Amino acid sequence: MIIGLDDTDSKEGMCTTYLAAVLIEKLKDFGRVDGYPLLIRLNPNIIYKTRGNAAIAFPFELKKSEDAEIVKRIVIDTIEEMAVFSAENTNPGVVFIESASDDMKKDLALFSMRAVQDVLEIHEAEELLSRHGISHTGFKNKRGLIGALAAAGFALTGLSDITFEFIAYREKKRWGTPRIIDEDSVWEAAAQPDTWDTVDHENRRIVFAPHSPDPILFGIRGKSEIAVRQAFSFIKCEPIERYVVYMTNQNTDMHLLSAKISDVLDSRSYILDGTVTKLPKTIVGGHVIFEIGDDTASIECAAFEPTKGFRGIIRNLQAGDEVTVYGSVKEGTLNLEKIRIRSLNLHELRNPLCCSKRMKSMGRGQGFRCEKCGATVKEQVIEPVKRKISTGFYEVPPSARRHLSKPLVRFREQEGACSYVY
Image 1 (spheres, rainbow, N blue to C red):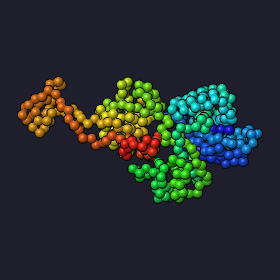
Image 2 (cartoon, rainbow, N blue to C red):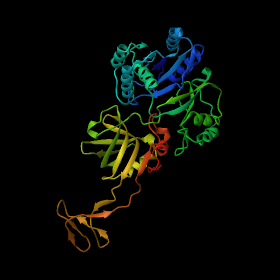
Image 3 (tube, one colour):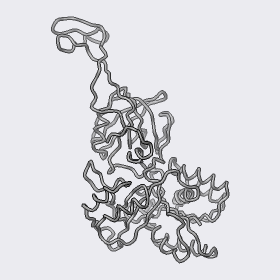
């Protein structure tokens, strides 16, 4: 049996991963998790999400097939007991896949990927559940069925790229109180190989612990279970109620679609090639905006204030620079997660030099005159220009990174010889 669940938390507290952790313990008398529980991050742009838009699924191997209905009842009862039903955007859903035809696998593979990259409606999940006779329960408006089915679909069909996260949970009596974690031990843990985003070196911040009043104490992300457990062994902190090692699609860039600018839609995430067409400008709030274009259209790109030093790279772009941008689109603007500067414009048009000074324009189309000797020329000249940035791959700091965005450390690991600049 594959159990998928979603949408049990709220912005004020609880966590679907914690509910899953409790469930795994409750069900241990009836079987075991076959492999790893999955933590699946869905489309990060969905307006109905609570925080990180995560859904959970786990393959469960029953000791006795006749216990299937008991297991379903325990899952549903636990959701009814723990989910934050008072929150408007909390609409839990749970699905149970007990057998799978080839047609079901094909349908779920498509549906699950769309849940990460596209915008789905509740009726699409309900139609698929009905078509394949998948046991399920939805609460309130049943929106959680989308994530529950998508996560279960990935548990059935697999992930092409995986990472791991060790999530430690707080004792219930401590929920809503300041977390007690020894900072020096966190920096030691962050130095362990094959882990990332435990700390933000550039801004000297610890980023692996949330600030909301939910049950999570911290989460350590990495390449393998061995890596995240090794890092965990260094952490000194308040007592831990329980922990789970999840297999995830986090930090994989699974949400990104390669497209032409003319094909871009709001609430999706893209990889776009283009040329800088409008110079960066800093607007109110410290956000930096510039424009790129391709042979189909143009789009504004934004490095928002929380990206901190990353904005310094963006401010040094010039018209004619060729770039690849990575990010999510909202209200027609791409929110940058990464940028690859493929080539720099190393020349610019300038007024000619004469008598050690730049000539002055005599008016539109009238050429240029030297104020000292009176010499005139008709056209500007092309001159080499020194740049303060270089080609390479740049990313926002960990404190501003989205769950699905792949950090450069993973690109280096997977692609080898690329040029990366921090």
